[in-house]
Image 1 (cartoon, rainbow, N blue to C red):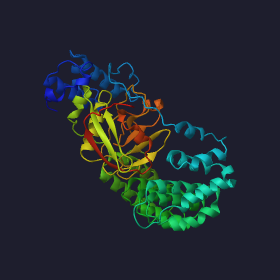
Image 2: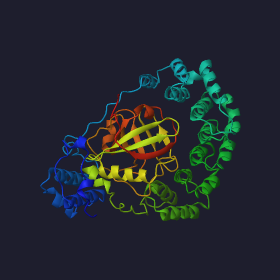
Image 3: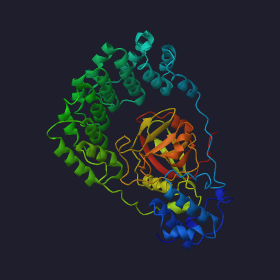
Image 4: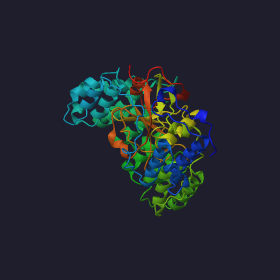
Length: 484
């Protein structure tokens, strides 16, 4: 990487008191080389030795941190190498309903509190959580108020035709149908045929899940012709529980899917199959996924290897990272950048990229956002007392950017509002974000924090599964950082 003009590296005025100092273009180039060595896990890079004895303490600190991250995947020395004087993370108060949300979880809680929560339509988090828990509580099967709430939620679902249904109507219906399939099978069964062709994919996926509880193989087979990857995944994960290996021919057909979660679920459904076409078709699928050369599709390749009885050695070597983004050096020196996340239905929130703790990941995320890589994606995972996650091309955790992003673990203990990178093992970032909805210090050991919500946390708290990200754009600093 060539030298970068000093003017592009200077911190914002608000950070001058802790960044400070003067660096030459050669120093900037050295920092870039250190970051690249860290990203490529190159412990022998000459830049690490040169930077370790540099006159500027910032350069020495970056070199020491890079060396530690390269040699220890869990970055045990993170506390000793924390950036002194870095901006603090905002402390976001929790919404008032969160305590009630948590109080519903213990198995000792009877059905009555769930009925109250399920009736709070103005707070979807409580409503949907109560419906999910009710499905696992036998006492709710004889509670007329709960059964009435569930039936009403399904009954008011807009028809399959017409405009795209709003998540505030489809989500309750989907959750209610699954709960009904467990509590009142006879009440749920007539809805399967009516809703199996509904326009909303989340409703059809709920039909698949309900069909598993009802052991309705015919509905699952019909849904195997669906075009939505998450519906097909639900079918493939549920059908073997109902019919065993009777439908292996169906799984073989879906093994040819180019949607990663579908091919993965098909491969896992075929474990132990004696179908005569299994070996050649699984081998063909493996060849195709190797040729795609996408790092995050490793799970698919490993599942196909297992079906073929081969050793679990991924035949696709992880590619070297792309050239280091220009912004990585500025971010490493403390410059702040901001991304505004615009939601289709709920509003906007702003994320501050934290290059002081994860400059490479922050820079690559900024690069991905500038290229429109998140536009039109969804928040496909919502756990209101844990995280929301999104940014997948297929609305699923098994598809992401073509190249892995490597970890940059830090001393940040994943506080509420911090933004982390989704992985499935060390150094397997896939460009999908997750946002911590509560303090999650246990994630420190495995997941990189590269940003923090600095405006609009109330919007984050209202996100529903499937909500669409209209666009993520770089913006100037918000007028207010943190809660009002």
